[in-house]
Image 1: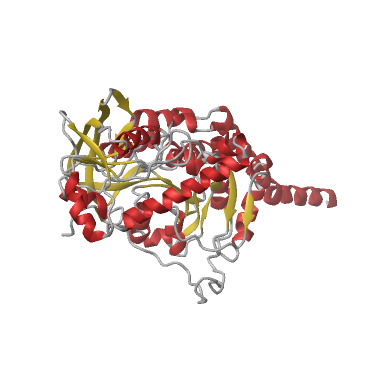
Image 2: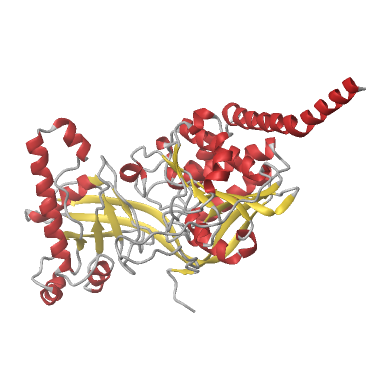
Length: 519
C-alpha cells in the first residue's frame, strides 16, 4: 500500500510540476527550430521591399503593403484586418530624372522629395543659382527677386564627401582637425545666411516659390559615402529635389565660379487628394484569457528615398515571422496575441496613437507589448520603461530565451518611461507595459535611417532571425504567464534641466487629417 501511494504521489508531482516545464521547453525548442530551419524572412523581405516598395503614408504603395500583409496572414490561418484611423494627403511618386545640360552634359543623382509638386512629363529647364546672400530680412526680400525663373540651391555645400571615420583612418591628425574646423565654420556661416533671410527651413522654400523660382534644390548629407536623408517638400506648385552631395557640390561650384549651370528636371508625381490611412491588425485569439493581450508592434510605413528596409522593414518582418511561427507551434495561446503594423509612425507615431485612443479596452488589458524598430541589428538593449516591477516578469521570460540570443542583451530596470522615438511610447504613455527591443547600430543613423540607401541589401538576416526567436519566445512566455503583469510606475526624479518634478508622459491623439485642411 505504501509503495503504491508513493508511486501515485510521484506521478501526480510529475503531472503537476514537471510536465508543464517539459512542455514549455519543448515549445521553445520548436520555436527556435522553426525560426532557423524554415525561415521565411528572405521571402518576406523580398515581397515587402522589392515588390511593394517604399511605404510613405498616403501613397498607393502603403495601400499595397496593407493588402499584402493581410493576404500573408490569412495564408497562415491568422485573421487580419485594416483599421482606418484618419485621412492623409494622397500622393504618388513618379520618375525623377535630372541632367546637367550646360556647361556640359551629365546625368545627376537626384530624387524629388516626398509630396513634391510635379514638373509634368516635359520637365523644366533653367539656370541654377545659390540662395541669395543678404544683410537682413529686408535686404533678402529685395534680392529674392533675382531667383525668378531659376532653380535655387538652399543647402550648404559640404567640403568633403568622406565620413569622419575615413578621415580618422587615413588623414594626419592635423589635416583632420583642419577639415573639421573648416566644416564647422561653413556650417556657422550658412546658418547665419539662412537666419538673415528671416525665414526657417520650412518657410524658405515657399518664399522662393512665391518669388517665381522654378524649383528648390537641397542636399541633406547623412555623413556617409553616398547617403542623403530624404524627407518632405514644402512647396505647393514647384518641384523640390534632393541631389547627392557629389553632384550638389558640382552645381554649387559651377554657380559660384560664374559658369551659370543649367539643368533639366523631370520630376513626375500625382496628387491623389484625400485618402484614408490604416493600421493592419492580426491576432491569434486566446483560449483561456482572450480579453488579455500580448502585442507585437512595428511601424509599417517608411520614408521613400529608398525602400525602408531597416526602418522599418526589418521590424515588420520580425513581427510577421514571429506570428507565423507562433500560429504554427502555439496555435492556442492562453492570451490573445495581437500584432499591430502601424501607419504614419514617421510623422509622429500616428497609427499607434490612434489605436491607443480608439481601443482603450485593449490597452487596459495589455499583458506586454514588444516593439522593434531601429534597424537590422540583433537586439542588445531592453529597458523596463519605468514600470517598477518590470524585472520580475521580463526577467522570468528572458531567462527562457536561448542563451545565444540573450547573451547580447543589456537590461535596464526599472528604467524611465520612453517619451517618443517609436510606437511603444504611445502605449507607455497610456500606462501599458510596453518595451522596445533596441538593436545594434550597423551604422543605422548615418547609412540607412531615412536615407536613399535603406534597401534590401543592408539587412543582416542572421541578426533578424535572432530577433524573431527573441520576440516569439517572449510572446509565448507572456501569454503563458499565470500572473498578470504589474503596471505600477516608479516615482520619477527631479529634472536636472528644469529643477521640477518629472511626470509620466500623457497620451496624445494622432494627427487625423495629415497635410489636409481642417473641415
